[in-house]
Amino acid sequence: LFHPFLSVNMPPIPSIGQPMPQLQTKATHRVAEDKFQKFEAWLKENGAYFDLLELREYDTPLEMDAAEEKKESTIVDESEMRGVHSRVDIPPDTVCMIIPRKCLITVEMGQATPLGQTILESDLDLDAPKHIFLMIYILWDRKVNGSNSFFHPYYEILPRTLSNMPIFWSTEELLLLEGSYLLEQIADRNEAIADDYHAICQVAPDLQELCTLEEFKWARMCVCSRNFGLQIDGHRTSAMVPHADMLNHYRPRETKWTFEEERQAFTITSLQRIHAGSQVYDSYGQKCNHRFLLNYGFAVEDNNEIDGFCPNEVPIDLSVSSSDPLHAKKIEFWARGETDSNTLSAALAAMSDPQSLAATIDAVRGATGSNISRRSRDEEAPIKRVRVCISNNENTRLLFSLLRTLACNEEELNVISTSSTGEGAVGRALFGLTDQRSLGAIPAFYRSCRDIRHPISLRNERAAMRLLLETTSRSLSSYPTTLDKDIADLGDFDNFPRFSNQRHAKIQVRGEKEVLHHFARWARAAIEVLDIIEREVNGDDTASFDATIALMAGDESPNGAHHTVLRYCEDVLGSLRREEWKNTRRRNGNSKSSGSDTAKTSSDFLH
Image 1: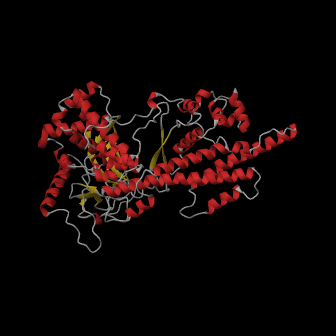
Image 2: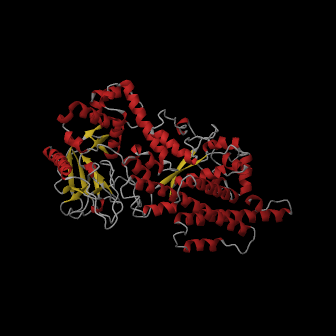
Image 3: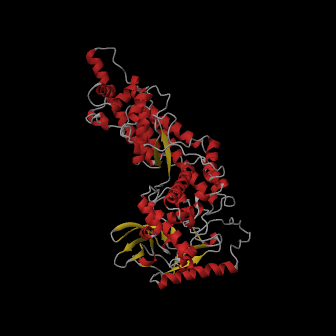
């Protein structure tokens, strides 16, 4: 996929019938060819092997394989696009690239420099220590050894700019992320890089002689986007691997890579047959688009795995409302089991430069009234952030647990927050919950708001789903455009050309909205089914849980229930339905045997 080998300031793709733009002159073409020829010659002179492969230059984006949206280009300067292709048919399990250890730049090499030694001795708390030492080596070696550096041919093909990386985006490009949580991550990344730079300058002023803050940022993103995590001599390290870092991203993976101790070299091996002329890909892993965009400078248009799973995610922030009548009690339970290390960071400090990226991002946030703080205004109520995707995974279950806690009334809060002895046991008995289901045998202090993995009551589950619907609706309202508008925009290749920052921003916010809409539909479906269950329990013969589930299962339209929603409604709410029927029969039986007319009916617990 689109790898930030260099900046992405490309002209838009012309409409059919229009002449193609000339991306480079013959002179610049010869210069580019010359430096890449020198680069490959340097590798081969030092024992590298890649005879089955070739670097191929694309004059225009249309020369790349447009059949796969996920197969995007390596951008190598404002005027160059390249990819690694096979010269011949490559069978499975074939070693197609060998890069000797002497051609790798490792963390240990950065630590061995004078500046690296100073940083090690200072024991600084850095944001990404391994990245820092790789950066230090590159910056130090380029400055001290210049064209005499062993790695000079490699440095020559590194990008001069990284304008495809969001931390370098213009104000206009950042505006396309309005409403997205990625703005906060961009600000965090910029702040972390600046903090590392200034912290190192405090203990090693020589860093200022090597690079400016902007050059430090450039080095950080070069390293971030192309380093490999390896095990060398039994030790986990990170390394820059020339040539291997030019393979673009594609999933499912077609190759694998490792450091082979016997060869003392980094190798890439084919996992399947790669046909002659085909581009050879690496997989950057199964990731949410926000990680691809922040760290590599691209977003995957169709970020789906073979099984249909999409790892795109969005954070949902939850906190106890200061207006909640049970605010104090809920805060105690909400914070139970948390430590200082779990507490989310306070709001970002505004940077003094009004033209800074942070100021730009704050201005974008201000347009929608979004809050940059991760803490609620009430310091007692930390915000809990859950990243969710379209899946019924652990994070989805955690989200529902938190929602159930926030939706509790006083009786329900007693049930989930106290042990099996005392008044909590009475609450559990009233709700028909056994000790096994409520985990009442475990002391209360072991329980937290993260553990409510089953519905507490029909009333509570409905309130939780209403809160989920309110939360997703509020998040969706923070974007200036709708999901339908984003989908339409992505069909407009004139204004949102392939591989452009504008397009990648659209892909990112579209993915976030798809997740939010999924959970909004989930909440609506759950509320509908819960209403059916309540009507059934109250004796409404026209309501049928089984018929409702059957209709949901039979709806194969695009707006039909996702399989995770269907399973939740059928299994989780089905179990809750059985509990409600048992409680109703139990209460009716107790009422008849005692002759009492004061027993509570099921509806008392449903509303």
